[in-house]
Image (cartoon, rainbow, N blue to C red; front, side, top):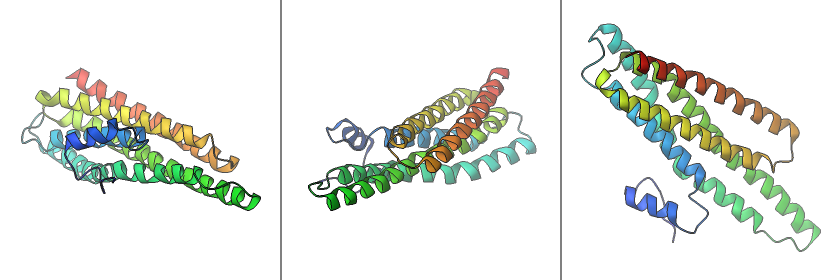
Length: 210
Protein backbone atom coordinates (compact mmCIF):
# COMPACT_ATOMS: atom_id res chain seq x y z
CA UNK A 1 0.00 0.00 0.00
CA UNK A 2 1.40 3.35 -1.09
CA UNK A 3 2.17 5.90 1.63
CA UNK A 4 -0.25 8.81 1.69
CA UNK A 5 2.47 11.43 1.47
CA UNK A 6 6.12 11.41 0.51
CA UNK A 7 6.93 14.51 2.52
CA UNK A 8 5.53 13.38 5.87
CA UNK A 9 7.96 10.48 6.33
CA UNK A 10 11.68 10.40 7.02
CA UNK A 11 14.43 11.14 4.52
CA UNK A 12 15.19 7.41 4.57
CA UNK A 13 11.58 6.63 3.67
CA UNK A 14 11.70 9.11 0.81
CA UNK A 15 14.89 7.65 -0.62
CA UNK A 16 13.43 4.16 -0.33
CA UNK A 17 10.40 5.32 -2.31
CA UNK A 18 12.64 6.77 -5.02
CA UNK A 19 14.60 3.52 -5.26
CA UNK A 20 11.55 1.24 -5.50
CA UNK A 21 10.46 -0.46 -8.71
CA UNK A 22 7.33 1.71 -8.91
CA UNK A 23 7.40 4.37 -11.68
CA UNK A 24 6.51 7.01 -9.10
CA UNK A 25 7.93 8.90 -7.35
CA UNK A 26 10.27 9.63 -10.21
CA UNK A 27 12.28 12.43 -11.72
CA UNK A 28 9.54 15.01 -11.39
CA UNK A 29 9.29 14.56 -7.64
CA UNK A 30 13.09 14.49 -7.39
CA UNK A 31 13.30 17.78 -9.28
CA UNK A 32 10.80 19.39 -6.92
CA UNK A 33 12.77 18.07 -3.95
CA UNK A 34 16.04 19.48 -5.27
CA UNK A 35 14.52 22.91 -5.72
CA UNK A 36 12.77 22.80 -2.35
CA UNK A 37 16.10 22.12 -0.64
CA UNK A 38 17.72 24.90 -2.66
CA UNK A 39 15.05 27.38 -1.60
CA UNK A 40 15.39 26.23 2.01
CA UNK A 41 19.15 26.81 1.98
CA UNK A 42 18.73 30.32 0.60
CA UNK A 43 16.18 31.02 3.33
CA UNK A 44 18.61 29.82 5.97
CA UNK A 45 21.40 32.09 4.73
CA UNK A 46 19.04 35.06 4.46
CA UNK A 47 17.94 34.49 8.05
CA UNK A 48 21.39 34.33 9.64
CA UNK A 49 21.96 36.98 12.33
CA UNK A 50 25.12 38.19 10.60
CA UNK A 51 24.94 39.80 7.17
CA UNK A 52 27.64 40.91 4.77
CA UNK A 53 28.03 44.41 6.22
CA UNK A 54 25.55 44.46 9.09
CA UNK A 55 23.72 47.33 7.42
CA UNK A 56 20.01 48.06 7.29
CA UNK A 57 20.20 47.66 3.52
CA UNK A 58 21.43 44.09 4.00
CA UNK A 59 18.67 43.26 6.43
CA UNK A 60 15.93 44.77 4.25
CA UNK A 61 17.10 42.90 1.16
CA UNK A 62 17.37 39.63 3.04
CA UNK A 63 13.99 40.06 4.73
CA UNK A 64 12.38 40.51 1.32
CA UNK A 65 14.13 37.38 0.09
CA UNK A 66 12.89 35.37 3.07
CA UNK A 67 9.30 36.39 2.39
CA UNK A 68 9.47 35.19 -1.20
CA UNK A 69 11.52 32.07 -0.52
CA UNK A 70 9.39 30.76 2.32
CA UNK A 71 6.24 30.60 0.21
CA UNK A 72 8.18 29.23 -2.76
CA UNK A 73 9.71 26.45 -0.66
CA UNK A 74 6.30 25.44 0.66
CA UNK A 75 4.89 25.18 -2.85
CA UNK A 76 7.89 23.21 -4.09
CA UNK A 77 7.50 20.83 -1.17
CA UNK A 78 3.86 20.24 -2.09
CA UNK A 79 4.92 19.53 -5.68
CA UNK A 80 6.93 16.49 -4.54
CA UNK A 81 3.65 14.67 -3.85
CA UNK A 82 1.69 16.43 -6.60
CA UNK A 83 4.01 15.16 -9.32
CA UNK A 84 3.57 11.57 -8.18
CA UNK A 85 -0.21 11.93 -8.17
CA UNK A 86 -0.19 13.51 -11.63
CA UNK A 87 1.91 10.80 -13.21
CA UNK A 88 -0.06 8.03 -11.50
CA UNK A 89 -3.04 9.37 -13.47
CA UNK A 90 -1.07 9.06 -16.71
CA UNK A 91 -0.23 5.45 -15.91
CA UNK A 92 -3.87 4.73 -15.07
CA UNK A 93 -5.06 6.33 -18.31
CA UNK A 94 -2.74 4.19 -20.43
CA UNK A 95 -4.15 1.08 -18.71
CA UNK A 96 -7.74 1.82 -19.75
CA UNK A 97 -9.47 -0.70 -22.00
CA UNK A 98 -9.21 -0.21 -25.76
CA UNK A 99 -11.15 -3.12 -27.17
CA UNK A 100 -13.86 -1.06 -28.88
CA UNK A 101 -13.84 2.23 -30.76
CA UNK A 102 -15.67 3.88 -27.88
CA UNK A 103 -13.15 2.57 -25.36
CA UNK A 104 -10.30 3.78 -27.56
CA UNK A 105 -11.84 7.25 -27.70
CA UNK A 106 -12.34 7.38 -23.93
CA UNK A 107 -8.78 6.17 -23.38
CA UNK A 108 -7.32 8.73 -25.79
CA UNK A 109 -9.18 11.58 -24.09
CA UNK A 110 -8.11 10.38 -20.65
CA UNK A 111 -4.47 10.14 -21.71
CA UNK A 112 -4.44 13.65 -23.15
CA UNK A 113 -6.06 15.05 -20.00
CA UNK A 114 -3.63 13.20 -17.74
CA UNK A 115 -0.62 14.32 -19.78
CA UNK A 116 -1.59 17.95 -19.28
CA UNK A 117 -1.76 17.33 -15.56
CA UNK A 118 1.67 15.72 -15.69
CA UNK A 119 2.95 18.83 -17.48
CA UNK A 120 1.31 21.33 -15.14
CA UNK A 121 3.22 20.16 -12.06
CA UNK A 122 6.80 20.27 -13.42
CA UNK A 123 5.99 23.49 -15.27
CA UNK A 124 5.01 24.99 -11.93
CA UNK A 125 8.23 23.61 -10.44
CA UNK A 126 10.10 25.47 -13.18
CA UNK A 127 8.26 28.69 -12.30
CA UNK A 128 8.96 28.27 -8.61
CA UNK A 129 12.61 27.36 -9.18
CA UNK A 130 13.06 30.45 -11.34
CA UNK A 131 11.39 32.57 -8.65
CA UNK A 132 13.73 31.21 -5.99
CA UNK A 133 16.73 31.83 -8.22
CA UNK A 134 15.61 35.44 -8.65
CA UNK A 135 16.15 35.87 -4.90
CA UNK A 136 19.60 34.28 -5.00
CA UNK A 137 21.61 37.34 -6.18
CA UNK A 138 20.35 39.38 -3.22
CA UNK A 139 21.17 36.59 -0.77
CA UNK A 140 24.61 36.22 -2.34
CA UNK A 141 25.28 39.96 -2.22
CA UNK A 142 23.89 40.70 1.25
CA UNK A 143 24.27 37.41 3.12
CA UNK A 144 27.17 36.55 5.39
CA UNK A 145 30.30 35.64 3.36
CA UNK A 146 30.88 32.63 5.59
CA UNK A 147 27.75 31.06 4.11
CA UNK A 148 28.76 31.57 0.49
CA UNK A 149 29.14 27.83 -0.06
CA UNK A 150 25.55 27.33 1.12
CA UNK A 151 24.35 29.87 -1.42
CA UNK A 152 26.39 28.14 -4.11
CA UNK A 153 24.86 24.76 -3.27
CA UNK A 154 21.39 26.32 -3.23
CA UNK A 155 21.88 27.80 -6.69
CA UNK A 156 23.18 24.48 -8.01
CA UNK A 157 20.18 22.61 -6.57
CA UNK A 158 17.71 25.10 -7.99
CA UNK A 159 19.31 24.90 -11.43
CA UNK A 160 19.19 21.11 -11.18
CA UNK A 161 15.55 21.17 -10.10
CA UNK A 162 14.58 23.48 -12.93
CA UNK A 163 16.44 21.40 -15.50
CA UNK A 164 14.89 18.21 -14.15
CA UNK A 165 11.42 19.73 -14.26
CA UNK A 166 12.03 20.82 -17.85
CA UNK A 167 12.94 17.26 -18.83
CA UNK A 168 9.61 16.11 -17.41
CA UNK A 169 7.67 18.83 -19.20
CA UNK A 170 9.39 18.03 -22.50
CA UNK A 171 8.83 14.28 -22.43
CA UNK A 172 5.11 14.65 -21.70
CA UNK A 173 4.64 17.57 -24.08
CA UNK A 174 5.84 15.40 -26.96
CA UNK A 175 2.73 13.22 -26.56
CA UNK A 176 0.16 16.04 -26.43
CA UNK A 177 -1.90 16.48 -29.61
CA UNK A 178 -2.61 20.20 -29.40
CA UNK A 179 -0.19 22.42 -31.30
CA UNK A 180 -1.44 25.66 -29.76
CA UNK A 181 -1.00 24.31 -26.24
CA UNK A 182 2.40 22.75 -26.90
CA UNK A 183 3.73 25.93 -28.52
CA UNK A 184 2.62 28.06 -25.57
CA UNK A 185 4.18 25.69 -23.04
CA UNK A 186 7.42 25.41 -25.02
CA UNK A 187 7.69 29.20 -25.16
CA UNK A 188 7.20 29.50 -21.41
CA UNK A 189 9.74 26.76 -20.77
CA UNK A 190 12.34 28.63 -22.82
CA UNK A 191 11.54 31.92 -21.08
CA UNK A 192 11.82 30.39 -17.62
CA UNK A 193 15.08 28.67 -18.50
CA UNK A 194 16.56 31.94 -19.72
CA UNK A 195 15.42 33.91 -16.69
CA UNK A 196 16.71 31.26 -14.31
CA UNK A 197 20.09 31.13 -16.04
CA UNK A 198 20.44 34.90 -15.83
CA UNK A 199 19.58 34.93 -12.12
CA UNK A 200 21.87 32.01 -11.31
CA UNK A 201 24.79 33.62 -13.13
CA UNK A 202 24.18 36.89 -11.27
CA UNK A 203 24.24 35.05 -7.95
CA UNK A 204 27.41 33.19 -8.89
CA UNK A 205 29.04 36.47 -9.95
CA UNK A 206 28.15 38.04 -6.59
CA UNK A 207 29.69 35.06 -4.80
CA UNK A 208 32.83 35.27 -6.90
CA UNK A 209 33.16 38.98 -6.13
CA UNK A 210 33.25 38.13 -2.44
